[in-house]
Image (tube, helix red, strand yellow):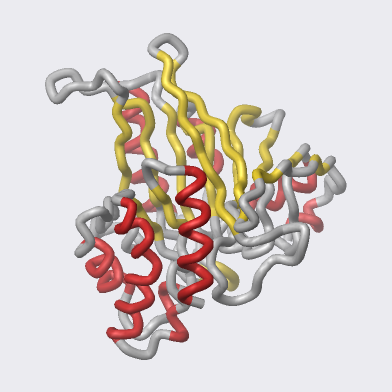
Length: 300
């Protein structure tokens, strides 16, 4: 798996030349790491191509990161031991370990006159169970309160900035909007979202500056969706599975990554475009999917 992962990373990084890489969890298959040394080796394999190219990164944890020999707080400490890591421990009182934000400044920003073009929010969706409901984890109310407080202050100070949320387990609306609205991309499995909706989507809508939320978790889904009636400019997107741990997609999906490009204009603010590049070096044209079910029975 090590050589496969590093091979895919080298292809994608060489073609896309990113300024930053965000990892949306399940970075190690914790069940297969029985010692601290195995976890350290797996982590080093994951970031070695980034280190080689001097590319910074940030992480949020996924359910498999939580299932290892060492606790995620120790994995976060391991990640932060790399100088290029921009990851942070979140506030201790919040659920999870990887709740933090990263500012991206405009080209003309200075220490005396800071201008924020974008804010990246990393949220920790945990492992299993959401608010005592069986299933996958979720973003908890205390995390949403923290997000509301931080994001509203950025919106007040920098009204033209772009907010992007990264998390591992998709929110329920990722599945709901696939059935009720127009989407773009592939869906080869049911969405592994929690059964309980804690309200992160509405918090992003209320904020107004968040226009993109990206999740991992679902190995063989890569689609983007939205609600044209509730928030037509807020996109919810799956990534594209990069590594080879666990199950892998079937053709026409191949392992790759989702790319995000930001554009900043002093008048209109920051906008984005996104696409997928796979290990065959192809830029993927994602197919249109039309609404297919209005009933809530389709949402789980």
